[in-house]
Length: 459
Image (tube, rainbow, N blue to C red; front, side):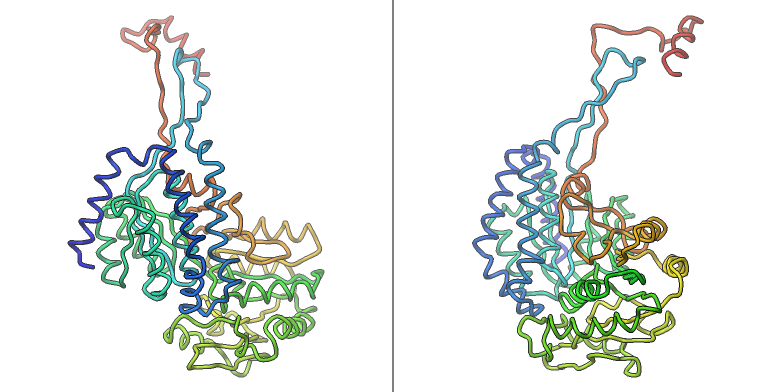
């Protein structure tokens, strides 16, 4: 798509937004219901696209993508009237007589740029929140997941007028053209490197942004942990979508005294969940492309592999792999893995673990497995991270009741449910002053009595 075409799309969206059509809450509800119906009707096609792009099974596609989008739509339909209402707040006596209130208002024309690892979920979920808040939206799905991008385009064209929601496909050239345009809000999910460029471009127009990035999310295995259950849940979270999950446990930080027991259980769980030959498992996915496949292979130290490591180059698959005796100086610890590699590091005290985690960039997630409530609270209180779980992995993002997002190097802002509605809304602070009374104390000439009254009101 050319720069001129993209410019026309943005202009159409802005013109449509200023008609006020999207301010009608009933209209927002109508289009969200239409979107939900369309997704249900095309569920099989969506899952086939995800299978082609990432090798996902139908069950995993529903559990981690379409099902979560449908859940977000249902949540918004249930709560949108309450979220869109003006909120009356207390008015100071000095402003008598008047009504003070906060009015949620859409930003206007929103750009949503989504990644390839959960291409349906991470495109449609923020779209639902942006539509619920009353914006018009330009979607830019990833070029790395073309089959899913195509079904997204098909759904959007069926559900929305092109001046309301539109899809721009393509690669870096289209991304650059979009970022040169003036949007009222930009929502980006992806890598830190691209996130910096998005923020840089947004600053030229002083456009607010939400950045959903990633990072090296630690998983602490404390010595009191239920090791069997911990291994089971860590294997699920680590190797889901072949490790291509922004909140996957990036590395295991294990108490030295239970490390061997934990690794033994991890090996058993990998075989139990994926079979003795995971690459033959039809429900085990693949790496998105050859570039990332080779990048992940470059992070493997053969001398430290204690399980897995087999690859299928033709199918872009890497077996669930465990690496032991890893240090913070190893190659696998220098970048977010985003693949099916599990490096295991050890610590001697929980204070040492917390100190070393805080010495690294803030991760998107943190997980701790422990039966000691005080240690759990110590870790989640003292470590800096976006969100996480105690005695589980990943599931904290699968709810509309809590916001999801990072901070610092792992991003800024959040979405899901009320947080998503708020992300795409500007709250106007308004005082509706009555005309039947006008207190004279604020007007010149100032008198002693007026000063005394002002001091009384403003104490």
